[in-house]
Image (cartoon, rainbow, N blue to C red; front, side):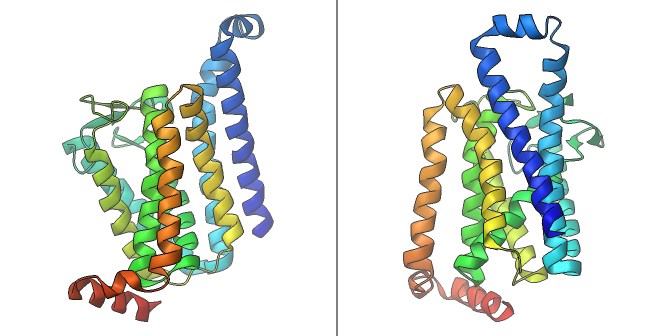
Length: 280
């Protein structure tokens, strides 16, 4: 299973590299695209196929690795994250809560109830599991939940500009202030992330996955939207996401790990942190 996880992650990394190279080369030199693919058949297929492959192989990589290290707990975690994230996406695409009003296009494949692509909840699991393993290596209890949620939210600072403005895998009903994305989406990601990591803290409080693998997963999934943002000159997003990670990491290392945050939190949060810590 360990080799299988790295194998699938290698395929995803190759897709990311191919996507960025193809996009960078052919958008800068459309005349080359005309020469190698006159009818743009491969380009059109790749625009959809690479996105689907990226999510599929990333999910398979994390699932294979998680099942090897945490076995049944990982399976329960996968099912829970998939169902909860699917529910949040269905509510979001139907009522505009908690992310704002948006809709997925047909580019990401078959959809649940003609609203949410089947692979979107798998993508939530991919990054949620990686963030949870990373966070648990740095902290515990409520602090780990907050750290994991922050890492997930930092990823979205790149993901939404890249996948809704650069490309059109989903579209917003109303133009927002952050690369046409409504700021409510960040609130929705934060709330959904907190729910997912509280669930993970209950199901698998001490994930046994290796930090190196989870960091690699995070890096691969971070690289694709980062590359798209850089290629399009979205410098605010390109700097904001790494800066957010740096700030979060410093807080996790200097404040959270030392317990300073818990000493200055209200009694209710301290009690929650203590309960989660005992569970861990």
